[in-house]
Length: 454
Image 1 (spheres, one colour):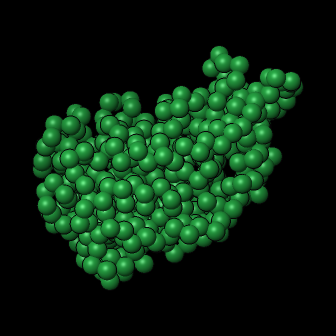
Image 2 (spheres, rainbow, N blue to C red):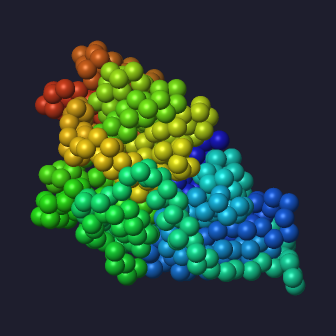
């Protein structure tokens, strides 16, 4: 099924401005009822976990979801603020039938979102999201209302944080610790504000914590993975070993080296992929990236005997490819990294710990670790179009793209695609010289404008 057929779910769950459709209490209640119905699983009382980040609107949506689930005879386990990967882990570990995350990830606080994991901790396939949508929008289960002892109950799970903390710490080698490692940790006032300091602190790190005072309104505000400037400045000022920046739901991470430089996610993927390859743990000698993964990552892996497979942008497509083909490592330059041997989804803390383990084992700083990685310059331009046409059927556009590709040869790459959410075409050109690829991308943009806006 194509995502374009969906009315509620997007590329990563349902998302929008809180208290405006579709992120309303009414939709959340109906969604809770639909989830309880779909995840019947043969039990009288199913169990569905609900976790959230620190947004003010999380209270409203949490209660509405829980009410809907209980009204259909399923039980609710409330986890409170919990990273998205923590909910995925606990859904499987606690043998629940599903797990629900209330979070808009890196979006500003006024937004919120809802995404769902199945009983194994994986995001739902399009087909199941469409089934849930149909139930929500059609009202077909309006008359299914258990009564008396068949109504579900809800309870808070106080030990959830501790279970997840021990799980994350367990992904770090038992013979290593972080003694002598000074870390600046920015939790973006988000879901990991309590958990992340405990994880890194109990492993022995000296911590300087930022973004650990959520008030419901400040998630991602001038902090975290999306705004790493303050983190970088603090690393330089304090002489820290590195900086770790998580986003609002802690499923992605950015790293700052000891010099205060932002380390691109593709560079981290390159280093981790190389180590897994050397250890014989990189399944099929393959890393899964996306269409936006830098050409430098592909060449880095190729030179060491591994390959990069590209899928559409979005961590869910990386995970789908990994599950389908048996690969065990992939990620995006934005900081989503999926270590399938440890987790079913991206986990910012686990990714940071894998890098720290390499640093400790090889006795190298982060800057030294990534020094052999070269990122090709990349130019990305957007052009607004009046009409959406199949570009492969427009000769002038295809001719220009082919000219640029031939000029770049094996030393560059062109990607031209429609935005999934806006009337835009995105033009990306990679190559060895910034000025040259900037001129090439401008030429493609001009050709597209003349063909589709003329």
